[in-house]
Structures are given as structure tokens and as C-alpha cells.
Image 1 (cartoon, one colour):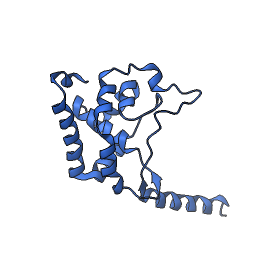
Image 2 (cartoon, helix red, strand yellow):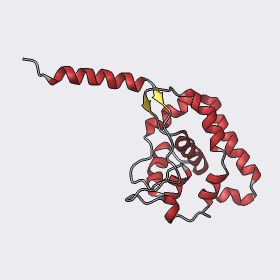
Image 3 (cartoon, rainbow, N blue to C red):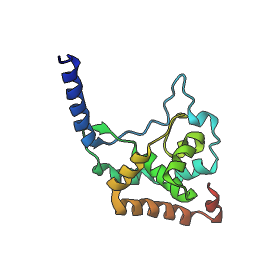
Image 4 (tube, rainbow, N blue to C red):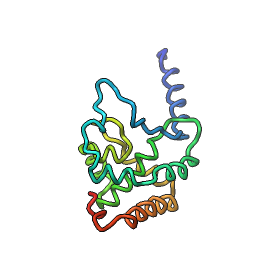
Length: 165
């Protein structure tokens, strides 16, 4: 005897698999919109904190323009480029493993702001596989572009720039 729902489940699995084959570019949250029950990061963090200042100096727009053509116009949304680039920059700055930057990101509101989050988030910003897929997507040249952006940032600043973390 066959269940009624088994055909529906099979169709749903195939449909979900087809959607996951393509990754659509995820959108970064708006830094200006507010929600009733979610604390906006801008309302309780020090806007002169070193990571906030650093986030405002990095040219995330040029990186987003460079990487957005690597995404499909349809399919399941990915994590925002700003988030992924922010995590990779912080990972390099602090010399952390992928797992560590993920757990630290949940605990630190300044890291969340640096990565483009608008509201304080109590869940992981991204998964380990999100970082792996992003690095594969942008390739060696993309990782070099991120590194180049962070080097330019530190060349512009004085010796205090090394103390951002």
C-alpha cells in the first residue's frame, strides 16, 4: 500500500535539490530599518569602536560588485557577500579557524556589525560549509582581492591599525 504523501515528498525533494543547484545572491539587511522586538546594533554599540570604524573604511561595495556576477539570478539565496567577506577578513586578522570565527561571531555584537548585520543575532551568522562554498565560488583571485582590500586599508592607517582586534 502506498501513502498519499510519498509522491508529494519525492517531488518536494527533487524540487529542493534543483533549487540548491543554483545559488542566488543573498541580500544584506538594511542598516537603517528597525524592528519592534529586535535590538538594532546601532542602538547599543559604541560607534567609535575599532571594528565599527574599520567596517566603515573597507570598500565592501567594490567587493560586492566584483563577486555578484558569480551568482545566479534564480535559485536558493546565499549568504550576503558582505557577511562572507567580513568573516574572511576577521578570520585572517585574528588568525582563527573557520569554526572559531563562527562561534565568536555569535557572541560579539561588533563582529556582527562588521559583517553587515543590522540586528543582534543569537544564531550562527553562517555555517562552515557557507565559508567553504564562498571561497570556492570566488576562487584564488577573489581571496587575493579581499586580501588586497585589507592591505590597502592598513597601509592608509597608522600603526594603531594593527590593534583592531
